[in-house]
Amino acid sequence: MSELNQIALKILENGKGILAADESTGTMTKRLQSVGVESSPENRVLFRETLFSSNCMRECIGGVILYDETIKQKSKTGKNIPDMLLEVGSYPGIKVDTGAKQLAGSKNEKITEGLDSLRERLKEYSKLGAKFTKWRGVYNITKDYPSKLSIYSNAHALARYASLVQENNLVPIVEPEVLMDGEHSADECFSKTSEVLKRCFEELIFHKVDLSGIILKPNMILAGASSKNQISNEDTAKLTVKCLKENVPSEVPGIAFLSGGQTETQATENLNLINKFNDTNFIMSYSYGRALQQSALKYWAKDTKDTNGTQKIFDHRAKMCSLATQGKWSKNLENI
Ligand code: 5MM
Image (cartoon, helix red, strand yellow):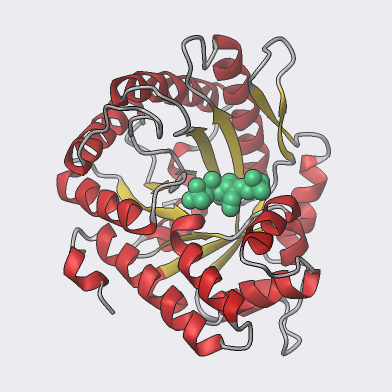
């Protein structure tokens, strides 16, 4: 078993998943402003360290994806954030893309950037304690999109990223996110996600990426948020498992879904059903941002000094997601 494979498994095994706390400053500012808190470096790290020192970290959070600012910050007690995570048995990870920019040659699509000087940045992040990394490609579904250009160019970038990351002994999270926005049907989401995944793995293999040392972070198969034809959670789970079974090589050890704008309970229930229907060898877990943090952030905003109250909410959410990775979640457990 390779070292990278072991790290990937440690992050996702035994009911653990990933906390995506890698909001760039722009996104974090939006999140904080939406709950009436000033977006200062102090407030950004305060909210994050409130989560990182919660009880659930040991049992439920195998890894945390950090943003460049956070990996270099210290906690109130003067600890480096990566050390704080390692102490509770959670691996520090880092988002290394520099964001999705307008894709030349296609009017309304994006290409993720950040390959320039990535090798040097990876060395720096590794020294700071990072054990894994993340890069997100985004695709939107319309009548004409995602275009072949977007599918091919994002897959190429994801593969070049993953190969450089493994060269530096870090586990790459490969995140091709087909967005929920739009009126498309679940069938369209299924076919577009399949196309995207298929191309990503062709490129990863072409770039000699060790598939046993990556984590895939995909979207679930859902009808577009504005579609009139929503499908049941059971169908989402069945289609999601089918799509991954058909398009992900069996060497990949684990899949950690993004929540993508689903509510906290929807993301949990769908993950639970996915695990009930999972007839593959892939670990099916979570790498949620909003679906782990939303309620905790709302509560914290009312009194940023109420650490215990905020942690109680985050602990509950993480516990629910952890149960979902084992197919042991049920609605009645939500009432705390
Ligand atoms: C935490 O949000 C990440 C994106 O941040 P920026 O847009 O500011 O770069 C995002 O990549 C996130 O890690 C994934 O989309 C998963 O988050 P959700 O909220 O979809 O579970």
